[in-house]
Length: 349
Ligand SMILES: [Zn+2]
Image 1 (cartoon, rainbow, N blue to C red):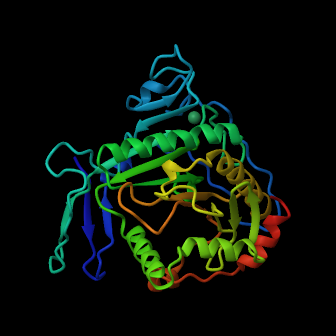
Image 2 (image 1 turned 120 degrees about the vertical axis):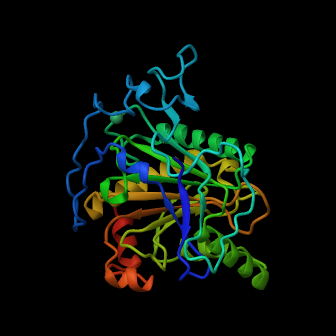
């Protein structure tokens, strides 16, 4: 059974919901992280190996066959020895294209149809960061993180070559961040539509560029790097708590300058610096915010076309819960200013 997009006709531009009922059957092992607290909480260290975990070495046959891996020459696919392993999600949120509509075909939702839907075509892949079951972004080390990020770049290139317009790349750590399995992994969603939030952000950045002749992210990075929201600098990259943070200890990371003509993450030469800086930032968040569950979003630009946007990373700790007001209004109430957050993070990073 495939998955479908459904659109809410109350929303003018129709953010689709993906209905993927089969994902309800997936196993759950991710631990619940503690509520956010002031000061450090000793991290609960998961074991390095869990015999019941489908992502642990030795259990390779419990996932669909790998589509890519970083592994020593001489080791066979779907056997132990890998450093990073990419497999199709066993419970995909998107329907693999069986034919019919091709990647890149335009989808048009009918604004007057209250039951509008269509197949949600795409690829849903899992990139297992590390053979270490208990590893986290904050603990697996910058060399391992850099290896996994190079694999992310390879998969983004493969998705582009296969004609997918864009890929959404995220890491969920901890149950409150949406992780179902504890073993560290990223998820890549190649979709045939540009996700609505990304499309709006691209549009806003293009308008900014039209008005001022400059890239929005360039201006933001320049301003924030010299502000009291600056958190850390790592070679060509800078990390800061954004002025408009939606949750306490939210941190963005971007190049101080564009690092490619395309602005795509796959074309960035700075994965080593990014791996090191994400490690520093996530360790600092764990130290000052009680080791919260968190999401990392690699905000990339579409695979094709010319954009005034460029890649950056958003680290979003689950330090607050969207309540009724947020659901009703789409606005967030932030109880912990980014200036205070950055001050605390700077002391740890
Ligand atoms: Zn595992």
